[in-house]
Length: 280
Figure 1 (cartoon, rainbow, N blue to C red):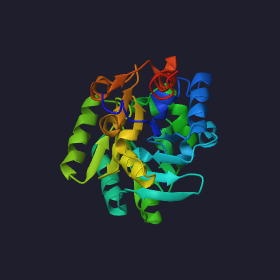
Figure 2 (spheres, rainbow, N blue to C red):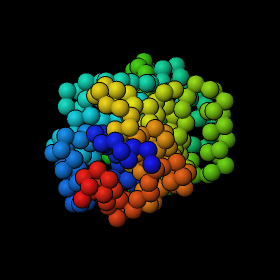
Figure 3 (spheres, helix red, strand yellow):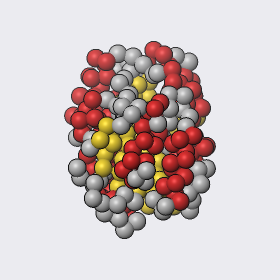
Figure 4 (cartoon, helix red, strand yellow):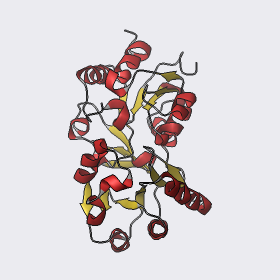
């Protein structure tokens, strides 16, 4: 399989449903394996749909993590130096148009701008009705800044947006919105779970971001490995030197990967790195 003969020097890790277990925790085994990777000079790179400030503190403060790919690849950052290496953002105009479009559907929406996530109180009161899993609700409440009107906040900031989210309680409504967004032709649409849509600028994918970071570090794409479970990890499965799907991953992700490992609750990340990278 591709990447088998190449020494892996960069490991990109989705967080929710992949590196973290169902309780959003980092297991002792996964932690120990990542520590060994760092010790061997392998770049350990969180690769997430979250903003960096929304990443759990135990990941942000993990010794040896220097680079991160956030908001689905919109931002590639040296998080130790607080330096943006690469970014692919929606213009303020695009963001406002997409927020206006949301009013055509029964959807909750939020916006990520300048490293912050903005949401409205009316949505926070009723997350269940927008199809948000109970395991994610605490994280969403903890990472959103509440504003009276998201669109007005974006307008006031007048800055590019890293990402916008739509959340749905109904799959048919989600499909209608997806078709409307696709008709624009100027955005990338993905999902991290069944009833959401994540809207990014063209070029803002996890797979593209891995290539850009590898190039910055003087690495070949074949020297990269990516782990994921959801729709926003699809490009990572296809573009990383070795794509590894979790046992709990969506079927599309498994089919696009080179390997399928154990689930996120069974230390699938550690198991694969031990066998393929650390050769234990």
